[in-house]
Structure formats: C-alpha cells, structure tokens
Length: 385
Ligand SMILES: Cc1cc2nc3c(=O)[nH]c(=O)nc-3n(C[C@H](O)[C@H](O)[C@H](O)COP(=O)(O)OP(=O)(O)OC[C@H]3O[C@@H](n4cnc5c(N)ncnc54)[C@H](O)[C@@H]3O)c2cc1C
Image (cartoon, rainbow, N blue to C red; front, side):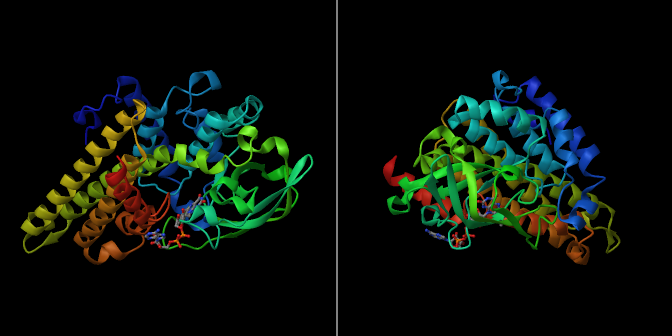
C-alpha cells in the first residue's frame, strides 16, 4: 500500500521519511516485545524514552517548543503504529495532552512540562471518564475545591489509558459543580507531587492487553493552583472541545494502519493454506471478500488522509472529524471480522494476529467518544451548517 498514491498534500517527502523512522521504530521496539507486554498488561516504561530519543513523542509540536513541526508527523506515526499491529500503546493520548498544554497552558506550564513530555521523561494521560459519567461529560462528579494555594480534589476516574504509567495526568474536575459544563476545569496532576493520588486496578479487558487502562482515585488530593490548565477556572469543556477533532482523527488514522495489517496477514494466510486442491485464495469467496476489504481500506485511507489536509488547513470541523472516526472504526471492525472469518478456526486463536486485532479494534468504536455520540454530532451538523 503506497500512501503517496492518494495524493494528500500533507504527505511530503519529509513526512514520508518520518513514516520510515516510525516504521523502523515499531518493527524494532514493538514486534519483539509485544507478547511480553500483553502478558504483563503494560508496555515497558523504557519504550517512552526510546520514542523520545527517536523524536516521535513531540513530533506533532512546533519547533519553537522542541517539536519536529506539525501534526502531519504524528499522523504518519499513528498510521505506522497501526501497520505494526499495535493499538495499545498510548502515544496518541500522550500527544493530546501535549496539545492541551501547547494550546492553553501558561508560559510557565509549557516550560515545565513540554520538554519532559517530548523527551519521554514524563508520560501523560487524560482522565475524563468516571464510573457514572462517560459520554455525558458535563455530569462528572470529581470536584476541585479552592483551598488557597492549592485545590483539594475528590473523586475517581476509570478506563484511563496510560493509567499505571503516567506521571502527568490532565484531569477533568468540577470547580463549580452548580455550573454544568461551565463548571468544568482541567487540572494537570503531577502524580509524584499530589498527596491523595492513588492508582487503582489495571483493568482486565477483552482486547488491548498491553495497555495499562486503569482506575484512578483522588482522596483529598492536593494540587497546586498553578497546575490549573491555562490558569482560569471553568474553561475545561471549551478546551476539550477545541482539541477533540485531532483526537478523533488520530484514532481514525491508526485504523488505516491496522486495516493494512489485517489485510496483509490475511493474504499471507489464505495464499499459504491449502484446501480443495488449491489454496484458500483460489476460492472466489476469498477473493471477493478480500477485494471488498481492500476497497474499504482505500476508502478509509482517502477519507482520513484528506481529513489531515483539512486539519492542517484549519478546516477540520467537529462533524468531519466525527465522521472520520465513525467511518474508520466501523469499517475497520467489519474488515477485521471478515479477515478473521477467512482464517477459519485459526482466526479464533489468540496466537494469531487477526484474533488479537479483533479484540483490540473493538474498543475504537467506544473510546474517544462512542460512535453513537459521533452520529449525534454529524446529525446535528446537518441542521446547523
Ligand atoms: C480501552 C479504552 C480506553 C479508554 N481510555 C480513556 C482515557 O484515556 N481517558 C478517558 O477519560 N476515558 C477513556 N475511555 C473511556 C471512554 O472514552 C468511554 O468509555 C466512552 O466515552 C463511553 O462512555 P461510557 O463508557 O461511560 O459509556 P456510556 O456513556 O454509559 O454509554 C453507553 C452506551 O450508550 C450510548 N450513548 C450514550 N449517550 C448517548 C446518546 N446521547 N445518544 C445515543 N447513544 C448514547 C453510548 O454510545 C454507548 O453505546 C476509554 C475506554 C476504553 C474502552
């Protein structure tokens, strides 16, 4: 699959070179370790430092803060992450947090955190979801009460990517519980300087076994006032909305790579497996199924790569980002299901890449805003645009 065939403007020679670097990185660092990471339920901390050294962590940030340039570099990195068969490593979440700080942080906050996030010395997470509030974010119950020089935070979060590893967590809190969405703020929690912070269980999941998706608890947790993102209370909801387009497109881009991975492994299997005097590939059903899967994949790729052009031109509206996430995650899941079927019983065995991907891909229809929420956003745009 040649990315440059779809003629997206952002796929410059420089971006394709970053893609090569990312591909090498994933092949060298991931492929040999992924079984062990799946077993231990978390990716080694040392990977973050290695990614920082390879220039991947800050690659979407501008050069003046130590990054490589722009989001095109991260876009291609996420495609390559998918191509290596991984959806578990929370590099995209880490990247979103960098962008929150870049877009809304005070100068002091940028200086304090961005260099350490770019180098991999610090790992970031974003904690919005609570046991009783996911899609309906304005109903979160975690509170941050003004106590002079610090906030006192009480509440809990769940399903948090990088939950066991992160040392800088962007936590959505209510600074004014009576004010609904306008009472939401984002507090940056440095976990080793926040008495009352506690990590809960690393959650058992049906996929993404290498991801340390976790619960977090805040019991009278103390966070210095200067850690309020942007320094003004009540801005959290707006801050989240501004960044969501990039987050959703990131998920979609990784799906393009994962679809490529699924198809590659399936072609290998069906061309090697003998049946009825030939290979599985010789059967017309196999060829038709693969042709449909490939067509879906191209549609995902052209759509998502076009959306990156829109993003870089400042024209990615929330509905387009929602459509990209909805389309890519739905089509990926359908494609993986078809590819699994072509593997027969082997497709159900955990040691086969397609079986693992079946579990891993499923989560993408839920996280980053569920696909039903994406449909709501797209539908609303039909009457407001
Ligand atoms: C692997 C994984 C990683 C995650 N990582 C993070 C993370 O790093 N940080 C974080 O904060 N969260 C994270 N999440 C949480 C994720 O964002 C939420 O699970 C998601 O937003 C859905 O919220 P919920 O689980 O509370 O489901 P609910 O909001 O209870 O939704 C349940 C069902 O109802 C549907 N529904 C809800 N509202 C509507 C509506 N208005 N109209 C139609 N249907 C609706 C939903 O689509 C869904 O199908 C992660 C989740 C998973 C599975």
